[in-house]
Length: 378
Image 1: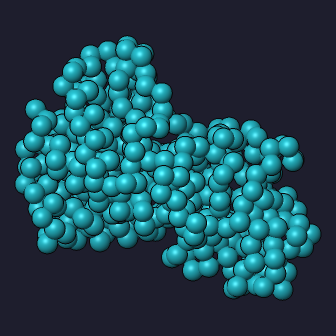
Image 2 (image 1 turned 135 degrees about the horizontal axis):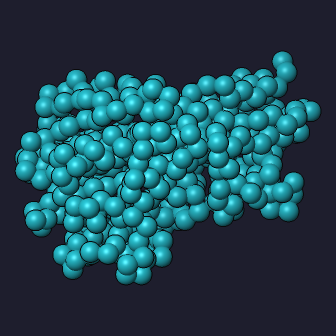
Image 3 (image 1 turned 45 degrees about the vertical axis):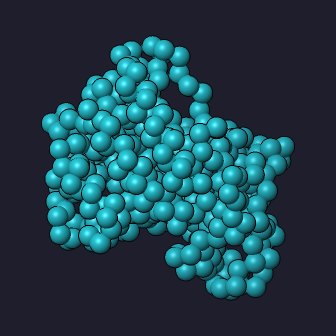
């Protein structure tokens, strides 16, 4: 049986340079359409059962985040349910940056990806499952450039308004695993945290803001090659209808708390980025941000506050980014949650690294911190 590499499926991305046998599988990553971004890969290795395979992904020094490769290990699965980490190394000097993945498949087909994928089919299953539960309303805020729905779930009937949204950057699939955990907890009628949250707030949840990029196997952009998290100052129907429809809905509902869920390629920790540089920032907003991070760090050891992005100087915030735009627009508590593609170095897992399961658990834990924070918001 000959060795084959395939990626023509939901969220697939790889280009075969050459296959000369199990020790010479050379691949490269397709760029996002109409863009120079590339980093996400997702492919299937077939016909290599019992053979030690050396897979080289080349030309990575010019990828979106070259610092994401050192210390990174590829995700792999033989059933697309359980994802573990493969033996992986990176050499910046070889073939303009080469990631080497070494695997010996125990089965005829092995799936490998930058992170455990969250397919559009799983997204539709999630929407259908949650929408069918008592107390949940579902609607379509608009459509993507490829005509895919931007799904919203509305849960709870409390006076505070909370917006949770994910996958502006489609390759950050851990963000929708986070959403799955948050949605499962929020709709659990036996969970006292969820029951209290539904009393205190109305949650507007968009699990996937970039379905086109998700399906196409993009890292960072939509079908037009646009980074949606640089469109919040002036979204358009031609370039960023996904942001246009979500922001219009936010303007109708208002917002007390917003969380934008992401993944970070380089930093091996979970952290939150805030809005410190917005023009009209208040002491109350800063205190709310500090208090939320303190609470989440107490609730879960997977979260920390020592490492993250540099804090913007006063008045220098990029208002094209959603967290800054919403904090400025509504005077609310807005946050960007970042999870690692690598492992969480503060609490590493040699087998799974940062995983779908830990992403989902973090979604549950973030809700507990929201519960403690809501009474303090005006």
